[in-house]
Image (cartoon, rainbow, N blue to C red; front, side, top):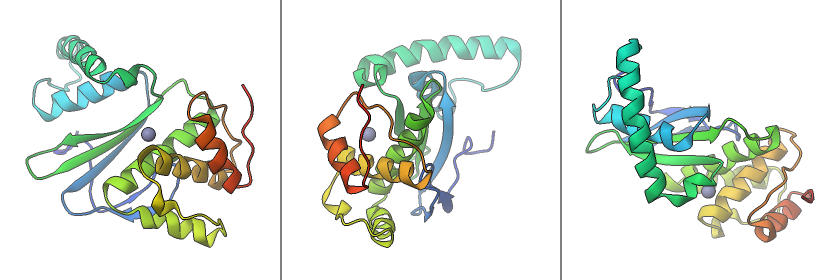
Length: 197
Ligand SMILES: [Zn+2]
């Protein structure tokens, strides 16, 4: 583990979109990829940042760490009920008083299609958080996609970013179970049809 627990600044490559973006000063990023439990992954990072677990690979320390992580993750689940149904997240950790560390993770049991969408979706959230939505808009324009993505926010903007990740990675549309109306509309813009479930 580095001083910043694997978070890095400067230029990063956005997951799913595979496009470079320069982070603002005092913003760091870490990509965690597939994890077993979203809430435990957040808890582990928070506890490490606050020096409340050791993070050491020594067995006894690991057992102690895991016990604390389990308790903290239950609190995180209680405070954020959506984690029980979420397939991925962008989480803002406070690295210190001045520096934010954004982390992206997804559950390890997603279909290959949903996995690509999740990366693109969370990268869209990150672009919005760091005020760089125009990066996606520029890509869409270059692709000849007739859409003003800048008028969309939050879940809508993130879904457009997820749709772009699917197109970019030549991945089929996943079977969505939520936000069907909006997602059908955005898929249309990319010339795609959503499979039924
Ligand atoms: Zn989202």
